[in-house]
Amino acid sequence: QKEVEQDPGPLSVPEGAIVSLNCTYSNSAFQYFMWYRQYSRKGPELLMYTYSSGNKEDGRFTAQVDKSSKYISLFIRDSQPSDSATYLCAMRNQAGTALIFGKGTTLSVSS
Amino acid sequence: GAVVSQHPSWVICKSGTSVKIECRSLDFQATTMFWYRQFPKQSLMLMATSNEGSKATYEQGVEKDKFLINHASLTLSTLTVTSAHPEDSSFYICSARPGSGEGEQYFGPGTRLTVT
Image (cartoon, rainbow over all chains, first blue to last red; front, top):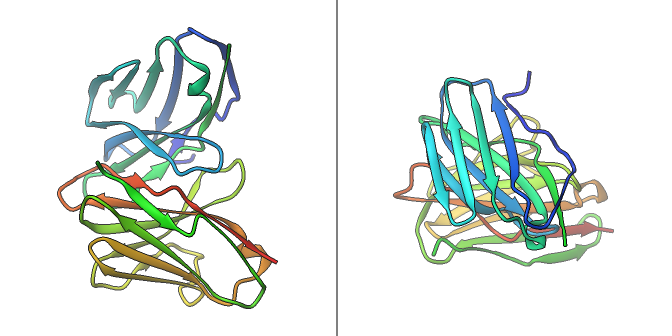
């Protein structure tokens, strides 16, 4: 079992839809959770950063962490064509330094 | 804030030559920088972790003599691909963690290397 599992998609939705992206993980020591957005041929852009469990909201984006289920989510409300990209979840434990990435989910929002 | 730059953004070199890629944190000091490699439609693969003033720690399977990393200051790390071959062609991305940040990690825009 890989440390971080993420469905690669692709996921296609119409403009305005609510998008749900998810990752599961196996290492209970993970404490820091991040979501990155990556456009083609560009570096990943940090979208959301959460420490431990809970929810965090920033504009149209909401990140949720459920440590008891080892499950994290990113919700995108009112999705736009400009949201079309690959979304990567990443996490690390408190003592470690390297981020462990999911494979990324490719999202396409059609107008 | 939290901007990381890379130079060059794109480079083509001949087989057997060496290429240096620079990674800079523009508005923060980064005690730790990371180098990743990404193949098309795949996730990021960590190559090495570098801490300012000390030797880089390489991931298993990454040749340290081929991929030379230098973290000379709190804002600059370099990756040199020595004696490049076509199989080294890839997208190389660096990232940096602010000295005060416990979790955030910011990525550069990436460097596309093509070896002919």
